[in-house]
Every structure is written in C-alpha cells, then in structure tokens.
Image (cartoon, rainbow, N blue to C red; front, side):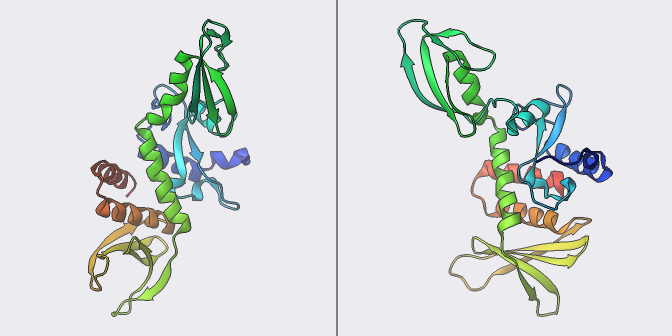
Length: 247
C-alpha cells in the first residue's frame, strides 16, 4: 500500500518504529542482520483502511532490513518461502540455474515453487539458499506475532460488571478468560484460568497497563494468558521475553 511520504516523518511514526525495532532487538527478522549492518525498516503485515501507520498493534508489524522489506512487497525476488518440488538428474551440465544473478550451468535441476513467484529451476547450491531461510529461529517469533495479531483483530469481547460494580470487557480463549478494566490509557487486565468441566475458577491478580492503548492491552493480556497455559517451554520463554520488551 502506498502512503503519503509525510506520514512517515511524523513524530508518532518515529516513536512507533522505535518500539517495534526495540522489541525485535534491532535485527531483521528474516535475515538476522543488525542495525550496524543494514538499514532497518518496519513492515506492516496487514493494512487497515483509515488507520495511520502508527495506530496498529505492535504484533501487526515486523522489523525488516531494506532488502527483505522490498522482498516482502514483491519488489525483489524473495529468498524465503520457496518449496522444493522435485530433483532431476540431467546426466551432465546441460541445465541453467534460473535464480536471479546466477545463471550457472547445472546437472541437478531442483524445481521449486513460491506462492507469489511461481515455479523456478535452480541448482544444488542455490536451492540451499532458497529453502534455509524458513528454518531460522525468527520463524517462531513471526508465528507468535501472527497469533497475537489474530487475537487482537478477531477475538469477540463482551461487556460485564463485577459484584462490586466495576465495569470490564471480557473475552474467552480456550475456556479461559481475559478481563480488561479502565479506559483511555489507564487500563488493567486480569487473567481467569478455568479447568474444562469445572464450574468454579480463580480470579487472578490485576495487572496494570498504564499509558497503553486498548489494542496494546489486548496484546499484553493475550501474551500473559498464552504464556501461562502453554506446555511448550520454548514458547513460554519467547512470550516471556516479548512481554518484558513491550510492557
């Protein structure tokens, strides 16, 4: 999506991009290079009509270097997202690698496919370059961001009132609940864990989330809940670190 250039020199945008880059430890989530090596930019995974670039939840955005950012927008042939379909032995160096910038003669033709770029035949050396990127540790981080983003945009919330008259909005996730109290930038949230089939459940402590937007509070609450109920030790560590970065 093309946006007026003046939007990206806005102070709000500069502050927002700094939050995203800080969360991602000033590294490109695709190639892993740091701000000392490349120019880092912030990529929006989704676009919502009417929203300014800095009004998105952090989970909708990724830190990418300038090159990887261009590949995400299909301005440059990507180095990730390719799937190996088949390998054919030509018996001699009678094939040509189709990877841009290569063109070497090849014996083994590796047929690959990318959902945005179609089919391509490459050699044994270049196929490693095209298929290894998806095995980076950052793929787990990007997956977590996508899950958080889906929760922020697709979860269903209901209004409620406690027995003491305190208003809140709540959402269920895997039998558990999240409650958010307050308004404007003076929020707090509560995680309510419930065992399946058990009617009684415990109410967790109130977790303050001051100076956060409503969508940012939803992100934090989901991260806390998911990190609490997950049985995956690596996922717990990832979510714990993410919470510390954005809380």
